[in-house]
Amino acid sequence: MKTDFAALALTFVVASLLADVISSQEQRPVLPGRPIGPTPAPGRVGQPCNYYSGCESGLCCLRTGRSNKPWATCQPKGEPGQQCSEEQVKGGIYTTHCPCLQGLCPRKPYNMCPYLPKY
Image (cartoon, rainbow, N blue to C red; front, top):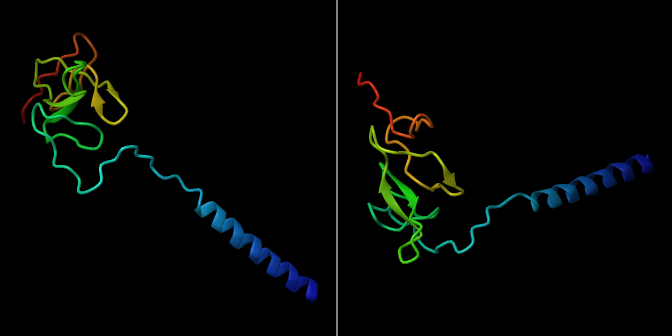
């Protein structure tokens, strides 16, 4: 009986310790340089953006590639017949063109937003 009680108590202690260790090892997002305070309002056309401060509806965060300008700015999503791209870097910043306002950007023949039928 003493042995059974000791085994039960030891099992309880080990289970408690494991639960404590496992709960402290959960993944948490690492957000370097995250701004402190309220979430910024979505950006308008031409305003700087990043993965913390997105853009208004109908806009995407597009990398500019110019050293004297912000790294990425809010730009309009593609209309039918305009060039488009689905390529983005981590965080939702697009590299060459914004995606289409409606539908997906087809890769062929010319990465142009399609004309979609109206219903």
